Length: 186
Ligand code: GLN
Image (cartoon, rainbow, N blue to C red):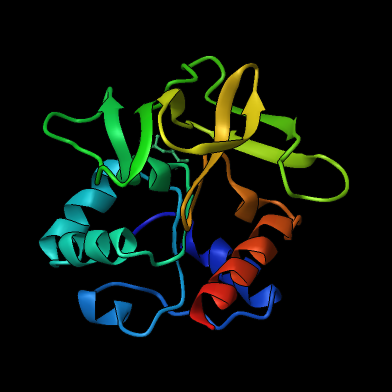
């Protein structure tokens, strides 16, 4: 719909995946996985509702479609949302409460080295851009934290990140996601 999808396409294709931009409910047909990119969650939600994609996407992810959600994507999936636009709600598919732009104005963009569970090798370069702040978590597995807050979580086949791996050269998270989607499809 909107946001940093071109960068995700580049990263996924570098990992050997075939990609398709999803703009309508029909585009969901036959996918092995989906990425909800960063951008503006309010705009994304509004556009998805307008074209009739919101409900079918929610059903597909709820039924177990492997999903990588980054930044605004995490907001779209969240159970609870604060500082959203009036009437903005998350899909309620990810058991986190997030505050939009919760890292505050002064530090609205920053980088942090993250240790991510399950990723071998060096720390991961976390690029945060007006990111959501995870205020509390329920039934999710926290796979990375920054200053005591969850910044990467997993719940079933959903992986949700507060930061932007597609804006780095580090493909490890995309590679893991492609592997998870392929395993779920086979
Ligand atoms: N602040 C944005 C939102 O509320 C998210 C920022 C991002 O995706 N980089 O949707």
